[in-house]
Image (cartoon, rainbow, N blue to C red):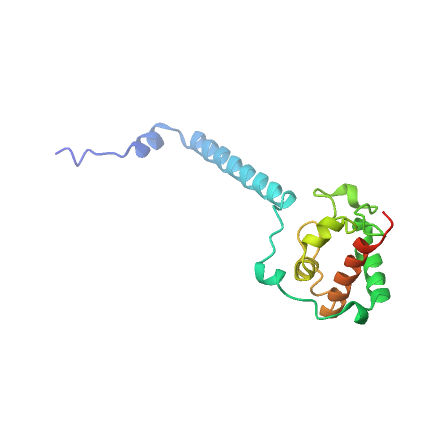
Length: 160
């Protein structure tokens, strides 16, 4: 009977290879797989992809009106946490800006700022997106909404 003499092809290879050679082959394959996985992780970390804001977040209105805004307080938060990348005046030319790709947003760009809703700006401040950190736990909702109004004021400023 032919069934009794059946030997899978992988068994033939393992029988024909000496144990040290087999260990070396499997070790090399394992190291190569680890290198591929590590390379993929590093690439994913440094190339986070596009910033996708959910449509429902874009539609959230700012509960604060400009007259209610605490712009001096928002300015202090901005200078403390945002200016090193976005610059003191919101142009995206802070001291750390050149380290990042993509470059930090220029909040004085009226076209860009007019295309972004308050809800979108709030979402981005809240959630962050590498390299920008999340401010969900660092700032209150009111502080983040005040920051949205401050960012809007950069685009309204006549100086550029």
